[in-house]
Image (tube, rainbow, N blue to C red; front, side, top):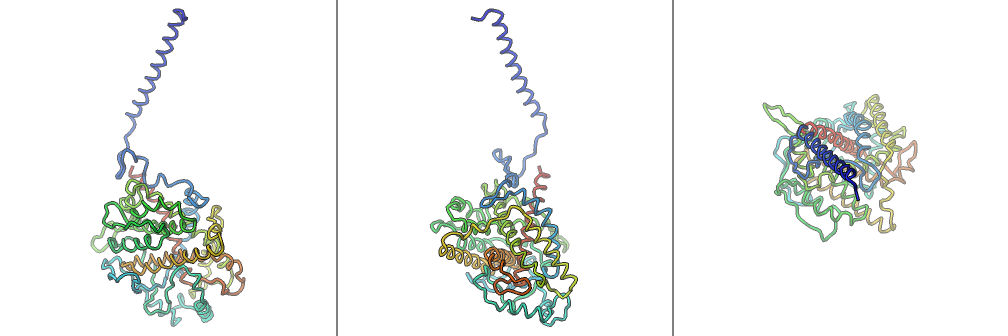
Length: 465
């Protein structure tokens, strides 16, 4: 039993605890009421205040041992400044492409009539290459003989893309700097049909799964309908098929970022203004707008970046050989271009968390060979689908980036041939054409730009808040 004194002491203690708890609760609520209120941001709901486009873009990537933060720092400070300079050099700025090949899969719907879809070719470059009258672009007899020898070498089984016939009268050189990748206004059923064909008919997925994409569905692009049901099935696929889908999704994400970052903001008095469109970016990547799929899309971009980064590190010995010359006819330019290229390649070798491609096609020999061939044919088919894009500028950059990825895959699966390269002479076991080199580096530069643009969009999102 408690005496009177003990009872009074216990009551005082309980009262003090109650008052203290009440006082602290009041203090917290009062402090909250005096703190500045954050203005609501477009697309947010009470349940998604922390679901901004990029706040969940963090941590490790699936299927590899790497984290997003490490890639951001590495790309934005080590790679992006150098590769931007590299692709401005003469050797890398001219890309030969046939934009007149008919679509092999459905009737041609005609070319886009929007003026920004138009590509201005460089017919004088073709003439200079043929006649060797333009010193900064033509080839010596020795180099032309080497190119001819490489072109005649039949290694079709190694190619992941359908290569244009460089002697075709319809193939023309395009100055990539004068025809930048940006939003042209090309959209709707035609654009939807291309991506629908890529995802539905050429991405590996369970055969029983099919749901046509609806281009008219509100707040959904060519991503959404497919990825909502496919992600449930993705874990059931083997690594190789999972990688294939992630590469295509990553490429799609990268292209969408380019269009959002270089959007036609104003067109007045003949002078167009291009810049970032945050609303378009959020429609494509905000979890609230994409039913949580946006972050996954962006992670697939980082995965694709790792794949091409790995390919560049693996192909470095090919370019380190003294007789490999990025020939334009200007010896000083050629020397500095190769020096800059090797600088970029050596940076890629220094990256500590590369994707391990040895885990792919590592099973039973016959099954692995069959899977690898199926992998290659699916990708080659996608490269032909680019001939169905109605916008010439979109087709140009889609073709280049697809060929760049195809070249990266060929490099990854040619490790033995690259290791056997002779130091002082060409090898018929592994060669890269000029087109493949240009596509490889420009394609990777586009991925580098995408990751850099994500940093810019992150800043815009913070400013908006």
